[in-house]
Length: 490
Image (cartoon, rainbow, N blue to C red; front, side, top):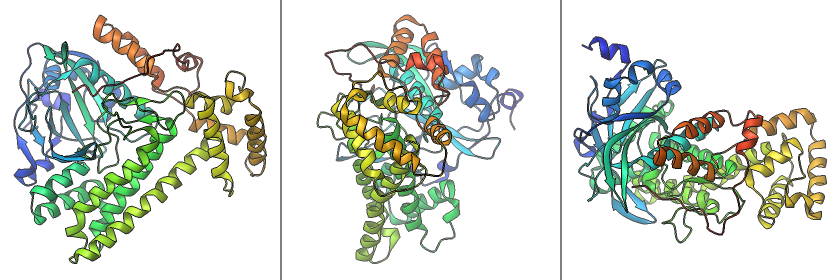
């Protein structure tokens, strides 16, 4: 029976993952921290989860976010998984995160509540299990921006500082992020069970996944093949959305690809300014494996690894199972291209289909790369026909392209106003510009000033509003001879 405080807060936990085989996880409690302090809190998300936002911001709520207190009904556990990291397979797991429980929302939805940076686990591999404040604030900021852009993503409920230092190259402020996800099931979860579990345990995991994320396929005769199809479809749509806004994940290891189709693990992520398919921000991606232009290919590669784990469930005959898997994986690129093309046409105000649409889009992107045009601002300028600011727009080749584009719009039934509205809804006015993200982190981490981040989050919360304040946030950084670099923050 829950006490009055638990009822007041609104925690409503169930822990279905804990009912899976014990080898899938380790039950343990977080390592307590000295003096937690709440520095970021997502009131609207708390309300949507059925939680009392005001009650969560008091001392007892902060103790929960710090891992110092276990709310009734919670079941702390670290999930086991494996993964291909930059192409190399290894045993992994929640090395610095614990699942607090699964909150059942007022709408009946089930979501994971996870503490990230909560201390060592059996999967820490020599790490301290802690997180620094800067990377946790980055994840909070970027994940909420992605949510506002309409891209499936984990979300951030809170960040607390721990009152303790974490040692990296220097001493940094410790922090814990409370992350909310449809689940933390990963391609790497299936890889772990396929490698170290039994076929029956693999079946348990697949059945659990279907029940949790794809219940509409439960009665399908080939339910495990349907599961693969659903994940392929979700990931094709997700990665297309990344490409359409210029988002670069930075570390697309198989343990960072969810079965639900959500973006997860915001480490060295960033948004592209100047359009270039070879753009890489991550300091550890020296070969460009996870460059912007490679993301669709890596998505297909990761899904092939998922398909391999499902082979025992797809067909009793190994050869036939491989054929079924290969057929589905071959559909990924076609699905991705379809989602991407539809999105690009929307960015250009195009409703119907013509054979030359792909070449029209590719010609624009080629010019954008040649003239080093800003990705977001180019499409925003086309939306409002403000063409005087970019070098690209002064070129003769763009003038020819522009006339072809206008003629293309004229060959559809929809009005000019309808096309512009479609473009307004498809081209964000603002993204988390890298220099703005760094500005907010600098103020918060080094000065204890969270107002810069809060202001930025407010601007990013309605990216398609196209307000005057957003125009200010769309400005590019001053030229620099040093390339922008991001770091994993582990």
